[in-house]
Length: 401
Ligand SMILES: [Zn+2]
Image 1 (cartoon, rainbow, N blue to C red):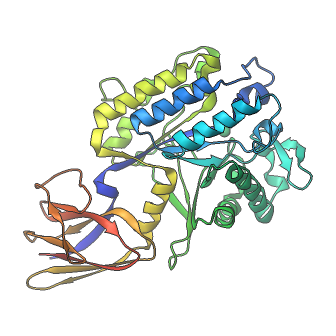
Image 2: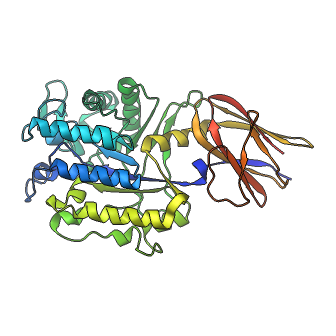
Image 3: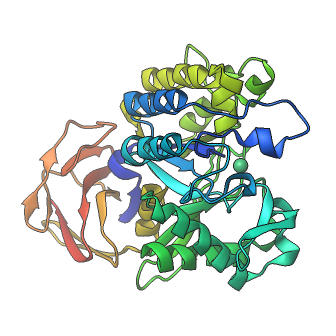
């Protein structure tokens, strides 16, 4: 008989996260970046508050960009042109107090438009989307640190980065190293993440570790979006395509396919798409999508910040285990350089399991084939047993008998 151990997602629930790109305090990026089209400039804080309402009502997690120097018009830790100072402060307060508890805040390079001269504090004559020939690992590290410090100055606690467009995809090795170093230097966080890739075709789309120190658990993880922006065209007064994500009956759509394939479930949208030039069509449609997710996926999915998912992904990669079987019990010794809440693992064994102990603590037995575990519980299924408990730094011992 063979015994093997497999790590699962926390509580055996599929991670789900939402990516929101391009927000800036009270300004619509499209007004500046798509200057050749007609766009509304001002995004009122009533809209930002309505967004925060949706985040809180549905328990949404994921990530929310805040541009450190939107469209290269000015730093957000100083009074922005085109924005009343009290409006700027109120936007930042809403994001800090109501959004950031549930969503990672991140830089999206600095401007999303013209690249920025970080020595002379002024825009350059090329865009961030085309800046890869003009930068390198060291410069990009400084560039990211510059942006992280601006967000840190306004109390936003940034944890990662997003590319405007697919900026610097040509130099991803240097890019991942730059954001990892920058997040460590400015924020003191050993694990960084970034969003650069969209994959709307693969049946399963998982976070990927781009660099890792196995001894310490420090590293960098790329967060891939698996589902397209369904509301981009609402800027142009066209409808969202939310059925492409999940239909009202929950039976079709990209997110449903990911769910059925036991993938991580991710999708992205843009601040412009939610704002819809002041109509908030995209935000209202997102509310419908979130309602469908809640109705049809329920407890089988777990909303997560990108930083949380990055940490779980790293914990799964760096946790080593040894399995020893005796007449009376199976002993699993786990060893990890980082902690992980609700760490979940499945042991394949033909034994009938009566109890699971971790570090001497008896875990709560749930009925056979319970799909979702709770903290400090276990459940068996035919040929295997799954448990969920916090993983400490260092060694922990699991006894199955
Ligand atoms: Zn963007």
